Amino acid sequence: MTFPTPAALQEVRLAALAARGLRLAVLRLDQRPAAHNGNKGYKLQPWRERLARGAGRGLISLGGAHSNHLHALAALGREEGFATVGLLRGEPCLTPTVEDVQANGMTLHWLGYGGYRRRHDADFWQPWQARYPGLLPVPEGGCDESAAATCMAIVTELREGLAALGWPDCQQLWLAAGTGTTLAGVIRAADPAWQVVGGLAVPPGHGVEANLDRLLAQHTNPNWRLLDASRGGFGRIDAELARAMADFEAQTGIALEPLYTGKLWLALRQEIEGGALPPGSRLVLIHSGGLQGRRALEAQLAALAAG
Ligand SMILES: Cc1ncc(COP(=O)(O)O)c(C=O)c1O
Image 1 (cartoon, rainbow, N blue to C red):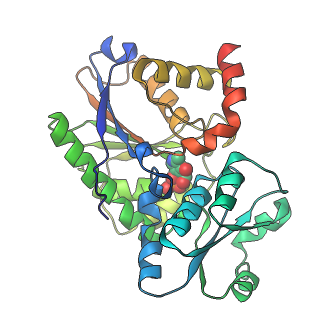
Image 2 (cartoon, protein in one colour):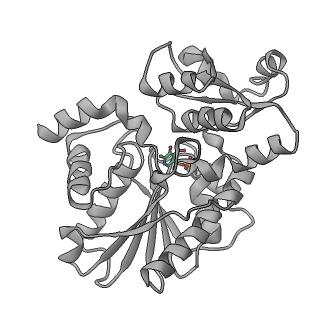
């Protein structure tokens, strides 16, 4: 998977880094357009290839009312002219994400909470495939082996970025994990000398560890770790998080979103402030995009940051 323009690897200046002799660069996957934003440009690539081979006439997938995955999927369907159907968690509501996916032609079905919980049942897809013949079912969050494989290309971009910055290497590479698909791809492709750190956006035991076991079964790079960045729950946001995001944006000009990259930065900042990183370390944070999902939370974030 190659993009016409490589993602920028941008070094940022922050007081917390300077005080400890550390350097940090952000891989700006967030700057890509909606259909390819963040990690989605990689995770959806195998599905584009299947459609290009004539395996189906469109895609059907699942997510919440703020889902970055459905947002990118709908934009891609619009861009490439294939049909998209979204199965949504909960009761009908109009969020900026829902407005966008509808504007991009995605057909929506609201499953309620009980109906959505049945998504792992063996016969879940059967009625949907009968209703929408030729639409390929994409697992929740786009999590599968082929998506992990295409996420390896993120490391190719990172290597180009390191060369452009004149950094010989990095000591730690941080990224957020929701299903662990992107993390698995990055671990597979990373230089074993770099430590890959996966910041869990969901609490431990919510599937990421099991997905990683499966997606890394044939792979040997041992230099990675997971840490709980979830702050007690996937959707939970609090004042410390809101302030950390606002402070990061004020110092670097880079916006984060609260569910993945904001929590990731706060976890990294805590390690920096705790003195866990040797002076001179070069760090990279992958900005996996998803700022679209933040639109519904702006007022809450501003109130928390100000409080
Ligand atoms: C913005 C953002 N970052 C990170 C992730 C985590 O990706 P993964 O599910 O591959 O762990 C997601 C979810 O897909 C996301 O939307």
